[in-house]
Amino acid sequence: MTAPGNAATAPSYADALNSWVDAENSVAQTRLLANISPAGASAGAVAAATSQTNPDYWYNWVRDAGITLHEVSTWLNTTTDNSAADTYKIKLQAYTTFSRKLQTTSSTYGLGTAKYMMNGEPYTGAWCMPQRDGPAMRAVSFIGYARYLLAKGEDISVYYDGKLPTSSIVKTDLEYVAGTWDADSNNCDIWEEVRGDHLYTRMIQRRALIEGAQLASQLGDLSAADWYNIQAGYISGNMSAFWDSDLNYIQTTVKRSGGLDYKTSNLDAQVLLAALHSGLDDGFYTVESDQMLLTAVKLVSAFKPLYGINNVSSASINSVTMPVSVALGRYPEDKYNGYNSDGPGNPWSLTTSGMAEYHYRLIETWSKQGAIAITSAVAGFLKQLTDEYSIPFTNTNTYAVGTTYTSGSAVFTEILSNLMIAGDMYMARVAFHTDSDGQMYEEWNLATGIGQGAVNLTWSYGAHTSAARHRDVARSIVYKS
Image (cartoon, rainbow, N blue to C red):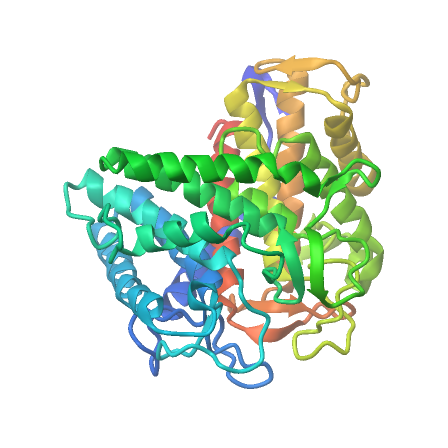
């Protein structure tokens, strides 16, 4: 659907979806912030969810907390509301104090400890550890905040002091990442089920080291900057092992050394999350890379037949009927049902929000690049929009491999418009299964679509606010508004 001036025309249901997205964004921000320093916990602790029984998620996971506060840091860096900024800074400062407590508390796995009690004591029960993505994610979250403080002319020595041994949070995490990323293949993945080398972990480690090197260089810690860059380069050089040219998708784990043994496809939505959380503007497993596009296609195809709710292709959102996408889970063989591993696995809110964001980010990326080169991967991705979601392309040569469409052309505009429609179908799917009061769960029952598992999952809220933010950018590009 294109209009004069190379702007697309929004579909008739857009206003209804816009209203839901905005309303849910407000709820999600409020509930996410409420899960930072909640009553009954130490200041700065981040509850993974408010559920304390069946399931008990009343813990601070380093990774989840890092993702959450990175989102808050992003809000801080973009808000013009002074009152909101003050709220975000209070949460970030509390998280700072709590994080340093975790770093300096003795535990079996050191900084690889993934799970803490809400008073800051390490969890000592049986658990899949170490998890080495957490310190990297925490470093990324604080680097964003440190940049904000530097721009304000404030001291950031609590985050980076340029010393060894260091007493600063970011440098502590960076030294850990640089020194342990290739220590062994015993690392647990973000779902805490498989041991080995994991794409998500490698990607966030790479981002932390690259951005850490930039910060270190800015602060005059040049030898550390060199060290971090060298290690990031080594990680980059080892990443080709994750690509499976026979299966045509990115494997989530290589060098598997333990954990569950039924995840035979090695296809996992955490690969998509890695692009969202860790992708830099360098084409390295970024959203527009052929490898990521091919993996996204495989994920949709794999999840479509697994869940009964995927037989529903439209839903009423704010009393307006609109198309909805396939709901995504974690991986096809998943048996975790939100309470135990007896099965069956369900679709997840955060992965479906992630796929919405993926489409919005494609719009941002290709708009910024000013051209779309049709590779076989791009062609396959666009073809799925038509085959799966009946999103038409009026130009019969849209899928012609070897063709390049530049900004301003009718086909370029149509591709971005259709990506917007698809992204909004994923957003509408999330809307369809979210409680009327905005409450989000970890999962949706695969047959009924009703929320189940952990209630008020912080990550579900953060996944929505992130997708909504990128949706705003994508809408301004596609609809010129």
